[in-house]
Image (cartoon, rainbow, N blue to C red):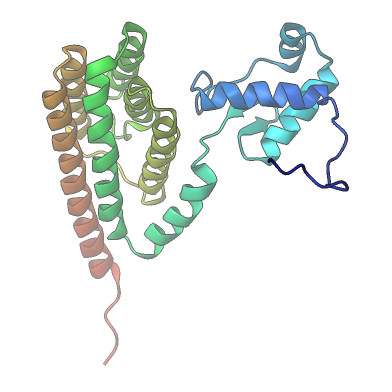
Length: 256
């Protein structure tokens, strides 16, 4: 015979959810499903209020809750943007480690290989036309920097994140957004400049990855991505070596 629950159990009254909590839940659902991705801008408050048929105050409270959870960032004069859920967990500690020990960046590249080679292989299997178009748009923007001394920067991030998006793995998209941001910040902190011809080589490598994905050749896409990251690693090692040599030459010899 089944035992009944004893009287005095700590049940509380069932309460209706507040409107802003329902808005927040919708926002969480859109982020977790990948419909809202890291870096995407949310519509203005008035538009959200109109679409959801709620007050602007409810929208503000929902956004405030999402911001407190590290899911979005409200930037004055710019708007509200979706954050990578991995950003708080990864960015600050990894940058601190790499600032102290420059060689740790090589370990970071190994992490990139594990993640991005898988993403390229998966994207080659299931990427949609829209996702391929997003990769191509990033490549076109890279072409504008082909002879520049600037690093490829944001278009490079956009390309690699687009590949992660094409894997249809939402968590991977958030991880990749943080991984690429950390790498870009590290380049900027180190005042890294692209030597002559470097961007041309990198852009060619990116096009080769794209063509393999577009051609649905998963093995070739994985191979091209791994080759690209090995090239990035070798270039980084060479830059670190040059930097150390410069520092050695610039350090005044001690007086005897």
